[in-house]
Image (cartoon, rainbow, N blue to C red):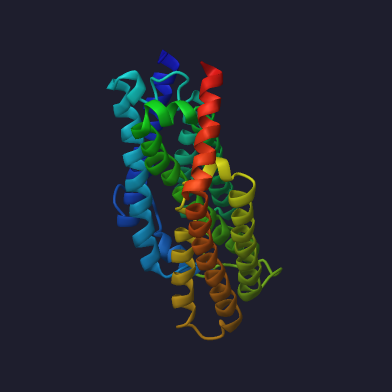
Length: 316
């Protein structure tokens, strides 16, 4: 591992920790960095796409703990033997590009916290989208590196292979999906309201009502779920076969939204649309599990194993 990779690895760890620390400051109102709480701003910029508060209390700790475990594993593996370290093995599974996008993804959440706190809706949405794209890029790089070395990993480094799949890839997919939900909320607020710092009530843009903007946003979320299902199962299947954390995020978020809208008046249209999206997410998750199990049944798995053995023989 050269000095550049070592430095990028340190930056990735610091970025992860910074994201956690500033999120705690924001949630607890400590540190003196933030003027408003996210819960207050969610009420001020009212729409019908934000889940019930309990969802945030569940998902954020899971996201941070999972990804912290992933980055600590990567850092700790520097001291392991070559065939047990995703960093030290050749070719490495933790490339410089992976680390750069990883760091940008986590730092973008810090930028989002500050931008949203200052009620800059445009800047906060840009920060969220940057996070989604960056985490998606780091995940894509990881998929490619693992798949290109799959035969060697299955033969010599099974522990590394599964730790990369579980801790790193599923963790990043979990975070990227949650940021996509946050981006949808930010998009809805942006097309509904103007930046309104200093106002007790947010100022409407006048293009969409809260209800219409929420309907448009929920339709977009539904289309994303369907598109992802098609892409991961029929286009990118060989790369992301073992990634299963995407749909639980959508299920939790949409279940929280349905629960919230059931207690609100005049939200019938978006309650129905959220319930439909929730149903689609549940069906997609069940179908995803069924497809994965089918592809791992002995006849299909044997064919895949034979192909990987042949690929490994070609490298020798």
